[in-house]
Image (cartoon, rainbow, N blue to C red):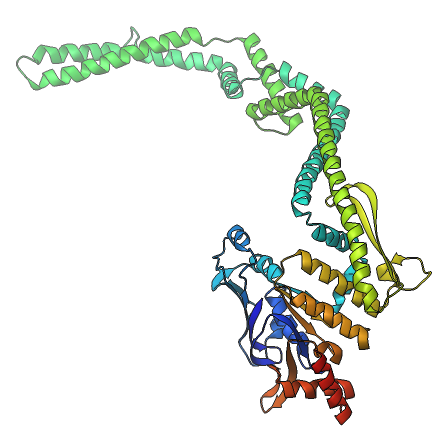
Length: 553
């Protein structure tokens, strides 16, 4: 239940702080006084889009805050799901909008997202405005009414889970079929490419090894000549380095006993001799290993030409990339060969899910069919007293292919006149008739859903007199069921039945025009209702009539 509402610097509202009571209350006021502004401010608490133009001229930000009593409405699970601190008795929603466009939301004084605020707000308050009457033309709205009244939430949730699995499997199957068809068309090409790469028998690192070997084979004669020259410089009979080094070692050894420093020099010379003798052996062996081999050179060149041509063909730069491409073609061929098996598996899964979807949808249909009959009966009970003695209201359920809501399409048919066949309610009903239909539907929903507060914004459009009074009685009954109902109205018959009466009005001051709302006293209510009856000129008859209306309450 909405206990209090605080608005600061919003549109024409400088500062508004008002308390509300349970049961049935009414709000009246002249057109343009600010009733829609108050509803707009409440809409911000339901997560609606913020507009900086709504900030009162000259202010830096606007604030809207509402305090709700939530005791007995079993909302703890929702708060836990949204990870919001829960108070079993009270919930405070606050929204702040700055001039820079920044919007902040708070639930119980803790920062919250607009999604969280919307989830909580929609469980606390329902605003029915005139544009919602257009929903009567929407099939999803009509189906939602049936499901809400039938309390199908659990089974509908289970159905949606199954349907989601069915849709995902269907999409996977469709994608696999498309891939299979595409790959089968390319199978010959893919196989040719794989066979060519596989026949090449490529190995990691072979390109670098072959390129180095080719360099050696291409310069074999030059390499052999230079190795020979280097060996001769080290070890030749005609004054090689080793011959000289032997002489150096002998000379140092001969004086090492009489000249101790020569012993260290001799050791160093011995080390050089050992290293150079090893080098000489390696050079000698290298002369044998490096040979001019035209056949091997041609073989290496042929192999490299194959690698280069494959790289050019497939637009890659390395043997590693060619190997990866070969493996990719192999995998695609393997997939092509296994497509039939995977397609059969997915087809079986899809069929299994479809069977379960149909079974759950059939159960939903039976529940909806039972509820449809109840809706027809209840609508007759509610609408006939509202000035429609010959009305007919039918709920037609037709079967359709499964979608996210089930296998039922729903259509509300209506006729207000005798011997007139029922037709689509939104296309045949007048404004006043639609208002009465919507009020009756809301009254039924209110009995099935624990919704603390309902605000009707001019639900009485197109009606008057005794019909308006009967509509007010319905709202009064709704408010008596541990619920708060607030009706914004222009009709005195409805205003007179409110437990509490609030008036919205404008005041012109030196700083501008401000909208206000206040609770009326008994005398003020008489005057307000009399004005609604007689217009600008307040007559004694109107005052007496107002007293009579309030007395009947």
